[in-house]
Length: 188
Ligand code: ZN
Image 1 (spheres, helix red, strand yellow):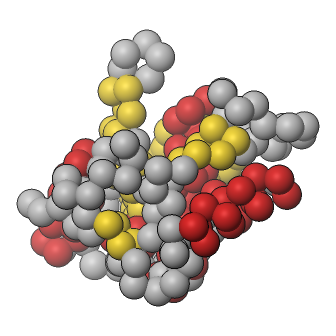
Image 2 (cartoon, rainbow, N blue to C red):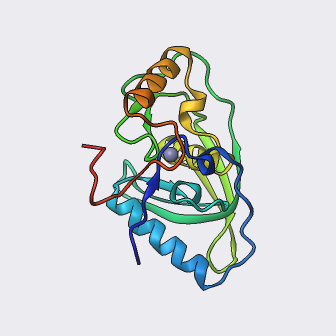
Image 3 (cartoon, rainbow, N blue to C red):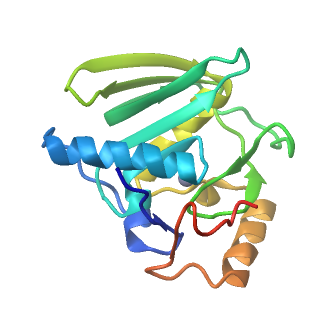
């Protein structure tokens, strides 16, 4: 297993639609192992393959819910159904979201309360998870990555300006910028 560098916004891989996984061989298993290790080192609650420079449709998550239950898994070639996105302004405390590809920043964003994830696991088995709350948010965030969409692309006008400023301030927004979990500590 290995910790992989995480691409920062501006790299074309993060802003492109990823391709379906067709080969469920050893290489895929290694990638998934590495993604779990990278996510743990970051640390983060979700990580999509494009974030480590692999333009394939899969993501991992690892999050302990309010009932202290560990929610953890890998979704390959996922589909996602969501309830209507609530209207109104996002709450700064309750709805602030971050992304390992825009490290150290958080901005509030409205997300659907419910999501149904249908995907394939590493052995090629189909599964379905009905998620609500923060897990539903993680699924929406990671699923977006597979379509080249970052949460920054979904922010309302005020917060979009804020994230643009942060990107400029850090000299991000250009191809090839990355950071190394366990070595760099942008989330501190
Ligand atoms: Zn992200």
